[in-house]
Structures are given as C-alpha cells and as structure tokens.
Picture 1 (cartoon, one colour):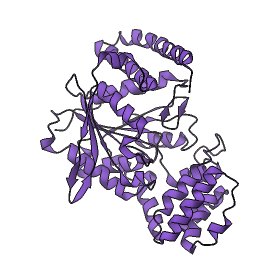
Picture 2 (cartoon, helix red, strand yellow; picture 1 turned 30 degrees about the horizontal axis):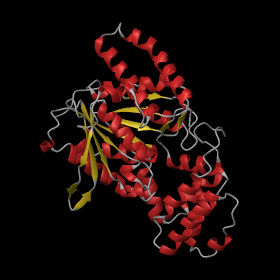
Picture 3 (cartoon, rainbow, N blue to C red; picture 1 turned 120 degrees about the horizontal axis):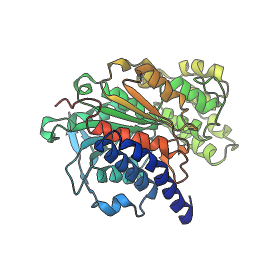
Picture 4 (cartoon, helix red, strand yellow; picture 1 turned 90 degrees about the horizontal axis):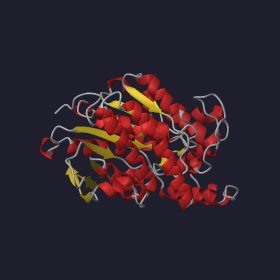
Length: 390
C-alpha cells in the first residue's frame, strides 16, 4: 500500500493527467466534459477506498438494501445500492468473482457504493458457484435469473439502460447469460474486466506459464493460479473424499509450493488423479489431452463455459473490455481475442498498466486508459451505444 503522502501525490498526478483531456473534451460538447469529470471523480473515489474523496464530499451515502428474489423455485440473495440524491441514470448488475465472501466482498462493496454515488442503481446478486470457487453453468442460470428479475416490467426502470459488469472468471457466464434470447435485446452493455476467451488456453497459462495466444512465456503466472483451478474443478467430482483431498492438497501447496503431497495423492480415485494431473502439469503440449481425460461432467462444464465455442455474434450489448497489460492470472490476449471476434464497432478494449488482474490499486500507473474506460462506461450507461429497448 502507498503511504499517505504517496497517495496524495498519486491523486494529484491522476488529476493532472486528466485535466488536459477535459480541456480537449470541451471542444466536443458539454456532455463529454461532464462525463470526463465524473470519470475522474469515480477513479479518485475508488483509489481512496473508505477514505475521503471529492465524490464522497459532494454526494450523500447510497442506500444499500436487501433485494432478494425468487424465480422458478430458486431463491437468490442480492443487494441493491440506490443513489441517495438523484434518480438513477442506469441499472448496473455487478457480479462478484471467485470469492467465498460473495456479494459482500469488501472491495466489491466499495466499488458498488462508488457506482451508486455516480448515479447507478446497482444490483449485486450472490453467485453460489463463484462463492464455492467453482465456476459452472449454474452461474449462467443465476445471472440470467438476475437479469430477468431486473428487466421485469414491474421493476420500474423508467426505460433506463441496463448493463452487466463482471470480473475475471465471471466474465464467461456473464456474456453467455447476455446471449439468452429473451434478454439480449434488453441489455445495453457488458463490462468485462480481466476476462477469458478460450478456457483451454487460460488453463495452459495458469499451469505451465506458456500463453498460447501470444505464443510465448511472458509475465509469470500467479503461483496460486493452478491451485485455484484444482479447487474449482475438484468441486465437480462425485466422490466427497476426492473433493476433500484435493482441497487439502491445494491449501497445502498454496502455503508452501514445495510441500509433500504424496500422502494425499495415494488416496485419490482415478477421477481425482485426473483432475490433479491437469493442475500439476507443466507441459503446454499435454494440456488439451489432459482435459480430454477429465471426468465427463467436468469436460461438459468447461465446454459450456468456453467463450470461444459460443455464438458471440448474437450478442446485442456493446462489450467494454478492460484488461491489465501485465495480468498474471488471465493474459490480456484473451480480451484482444474477444475484441477481434466482435469487431471495434461492437466492442472496445482498454489496457491499463498497473491493474493487478481486477484490482485498481493505489499504485496504478496508467490512469489515462482507466479514465477513458470509465468515461465510455458512463456514455454507454447514458444510452450512447443504442436506445434502451423497453
């Protein structure tokens, strides 16, 4: 974390970096100037965390309330953040990633609060699959349920835009949910931060350090990435003992990468050993074969979540991609592939440096890119890409 003086210098440098852009925006028109100023206030508030900021000074605290709902017999806990001093400009469905804290993850709560201060009605559902560190088709269903609830005619949205925002491995389920026929005409934009495109390529990087998209070994992968993968896939095993053994193995190796695990491996079933073999593999050439050797239920889940296998051309929402250039969990090439797949008329990509996978840290080095991305988000929320389909 930066010291207080360093944080102060950062805020001043952020402001200075954007002042010139605001002056240029004045040539375009007042809405552009206003959104540019708002984008700056949002970034400074995110970087301030719970501390003081100009946005906090000029707005009342948003109201957080329970927004639990039930669809087709499924109960969904959710939180609703409402601007306290203005009518909502848009509705943002904000999705958490792989975290046991779910919708109450502290950084997500702070981010939702910031966006509510900026005029968004924010809906944050709890995703049980993500909370259990196991991404699956259930997450697609739960996100789709949330969108159906938000888009219900009785929700009283005043014809405002509705958008989705997802981080990391939640990006796949979010985009697939946005492709649902009954929903896709109503979702105006999707913001994907640090997301994936090809799951086999993402697994290859996490386990071997080789990035098939760039064709090279660049930024070293996060050492815990392969053990997150192990924990995630082990939850799909039918044998409870395998799930417990692989979770214990992952925990042990995250504490000490050289820890002995033979005592655990000896107790695994063939299916458990297949899951471990994929996570422990270091040879890029073996990854796809090891995926084929996984239990059928896990293979089916990976196939269903793989964006490279989806009909992305049917997406109606504008896709706003934000991906750190030095991301060591999912390489930036995945977002570049998404941009290439959809085209620059339907998607945009911003690649800030200093973005730690999905966390805007006080050490941020490339404020210009994030400011541009935030300004575009505001433009999309205000109906910039297309008129809301009410």
